Length: 172
Image (cartoon, helix red, strand yellow):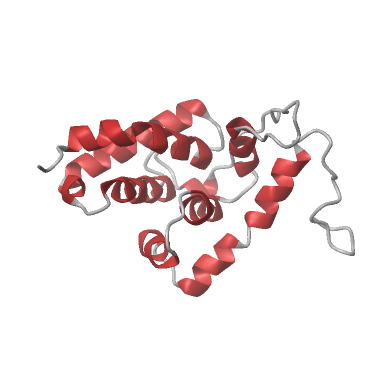
């Protein structure tokens, strides 16, 4: 029995919201706008409820919405995430999602989307390339930002070594 769009949206809501928080660098109002805009876009297309991997289909719509700037009415590449204090965990080995979301704010939008798809959601390179409209080389360039993401997470974690990820010249 085929699921309705509404059933698909409800089943995927938690995972989509966590993704929206990562893409919005932990900005809850922006994540909510992105999620709503993504679901509205997906609802207009409707074929996703019949897609073999419907949750991935919805995630792809959210990345497209994020990259197009539909949630704010202006291109996302022109917006800088707001600066906010980085949450700190009492346990340096237990990095909470808010730390990860805040660290994502240090990344440009396209690398942030690529990292979310490939590293966090485990999309194949081919699927991520198709959704993002890049070739293999372009995706690999975007994924190089994982080092910056890791440095930002470590920098906001108590007890971490701030020199991790620095080059011999001291640049980060």
